[in-house]
Amino acid sequence: MHPNVKKLLELQKVDQEIVSLRRDTASLPAEELKRKRKLDDLERLALERKDRSTKVELETRALDITVKQSDDEIKKLNERLNAVRNNAEYQATLFQIESVVRERDRLQDECLKLLEGMDALKAELTTAAAAAAEERKVFEGFLAEAAKLRAACELKVVGVIEKRKFVAEGIPNDLLTGYERLFATRDGLAVCSVERGFCQGCYNKITTNDTAKLMGGTTVISCDSCQRILYLPR
Ligand SMILES: [Zn+2]
Image (cartoon, helix red, strand yellow):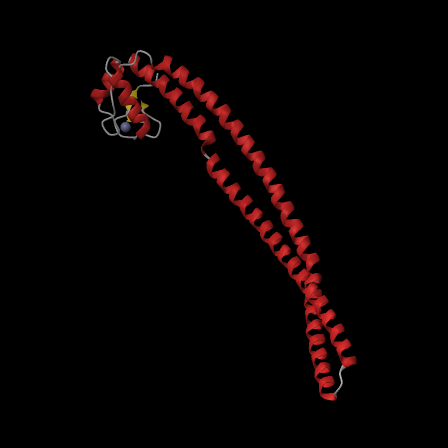
């Protein structure tokens, strides 16, 4: 094997290791987004339920105040009823009392209905808030783990990149540049073997002439079809 091809083959192993290390953390951003969406949904639901619960509470309080005001009004109307001097005024006041009482009862019913629903609303709010808090804990745990994984991975990559410098030493610049371009465009396989006369990168046949040169080991031979740098395994 040509000594530069031997070096390139070593370099390819290092580069594949870097790719593999980076692949370990490549799925993290998508996973984080997925988990964040789930958390956002749960937090939104909890907030909606809290808003709804607060709104009902305020409505109940307002109705209660109105009912009390109606009670005061009824009391005043009853007092007036005792002071009226003629029948027409008496009838009119009586009619007014009936009307206020009817409205008061209607408001009180409405208030009671809201109060009855309040327990269920509060229970729903508690459940939603607990689910959101639990999911936040899970999400924060995931973030911490992901950060650890990223840091560990980066540390390893830095080590491998350091090693790469030594492995790449002595390879002619144009050959190295060509190799790097192939590694990037040929799916991480720039140097590949020839087996039974076929390039193992693209499975095309290698000419007898090139096979002879490969056996000689004095020239760097590339595949005519895929341009990958070739070698004959021992
Ligand atoms: Zn090929």
